[in-house]
Length: 349
Image (cartoon, rainbow, N blue to C red):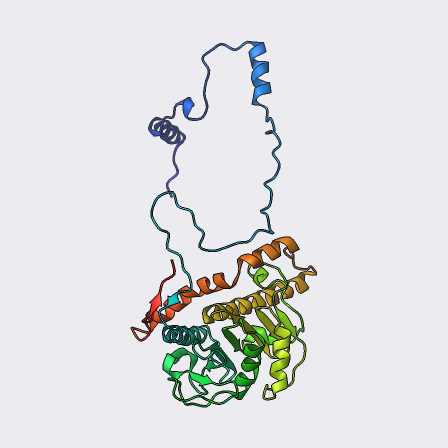
């Protein structure tokens, strides 16, 4: 290592000063050329002190009692804003085809999310558009991830598999029939029901409690999901299905103690989305509760008024909208096997 002499260091500093970028003092602050008097200096000192801004009240929260409706968008021009709405149909046959397409797509989406790992322990049902006391269900032994509309099985109100309606003549999980037939009978407004055995749900259901409003997404289920506190074994008995339907009540989902959870919707899109959303909220609560146990604290809950407002925004129509990205994923992954639309489907303005 070569040591620089004192003269060399002075020369280097001089060169550095000459080559350093030269900034005007105005770059940093404004210099007044007016000669300052003691009075002006005093005034300057006062004016330079921080003066708090006038107090302004905090913004008022929105009116949480108001109704929220999708599709009511305003524009500044004449262009039409495209919205996602449940379509109309030229015929009941077209609506049946639409429901079956989205039914199969929902099953594939559930398979992609990892809900296909329990063998027969999962089923999705959709009320038929032509025979409203019948519903479609996934067959035994068919992977969710490869489900097609033609694989679906049509079941009548007596539990028989129906021929002559384009359904697959294949056996189904009897527990699926027991649970879902009771739900569809008790809830005429329900078009679809989804039930699977996820790991978070199986863990959470053993705690015997409901979801808490610990985040925005959990507010979707605030005072809008039930708790079935019993467990009658594998649901082969009709009473077990009736108990589950009773615990569901008029809500969008139910925790099944020592079992899992179930969600319903006015479309299979909504029911499938809600199932995944509820499962993720369950997982979030398990994580939050575990963290709080380690820290000796408790979770912060969303206040009642805000939680109710958020739940009302997260209505069934929004759940349908939220699933459409998942539906597109399934359609594009099918490499042309699944269409985006069915014949006779009329987009809603």
